[in-house]
Amino acid sequence: MKSAWEFFINSDLFHKIFGSGFGCFFLIPQKYVIFDGLRHSFGAHNNYLNALCETGLVGLVAFFAFFALSLRVLYKRKHPLSKSFFYATIAMLFSGLTQETFWVTVSFHNLWLIYMVLFALVLKMSYVQESK
Image (cartoon, rainbow, N blue to C red; front, side, top):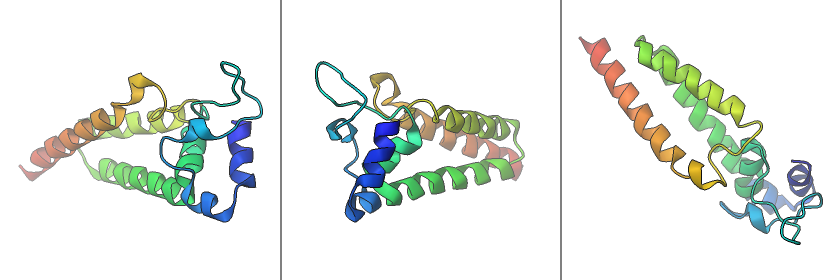
């Protein structure tokens, strides 16, 4: 995490705004990681630092905006499944402080798809329930 933060702080203005490219964290040289003799890592072990390094401030703001809007919509729904998904999303966002929930590992690659499908189903079910 320290190398990722130092990379962001020491990068030029373009990289601070737009990042190094989505999925390109492994190209960022790391001071504190030695993996297979190389000084590279596949992730920052933090969703927010990973997003900041790969997509810059623009991507991090978009990431926060997406989840802020999602949480707002879920919170306003009265359906119990919406409330459950609201709290599950908060838990997932907190877990992102110590791991790359949406990045790096193969097991997480499909999490975006699963999250969005579940989000759509929860919204649809709560909409149907509230419209009755």
